[in-house]
Length: 75
Image 1 (cartoon, one colour):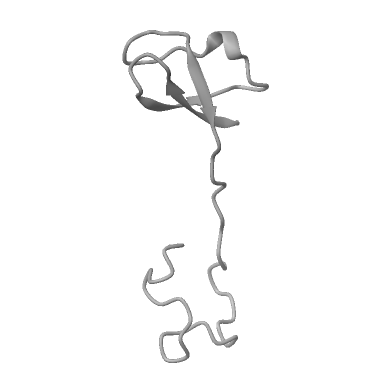
Image 2 (cartoon, one colour):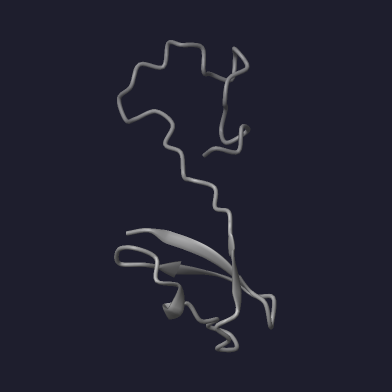
């Protein structure tokens, strides 16, 4: 299910809209003020790093300077 981010052009609130299929712009209204005037924002896709049980011998630990405890801001 695609998720799109919008900013209301009347009240400047940012909000997400979940579309069941293709984006239908006429269905997008601001949940705060009800305005149909909006600007679609560029979204950053979610990235999955690694998986449970994966071999972590590739140097991604705190000792070797890899991502450690959320320091890379991906976690």
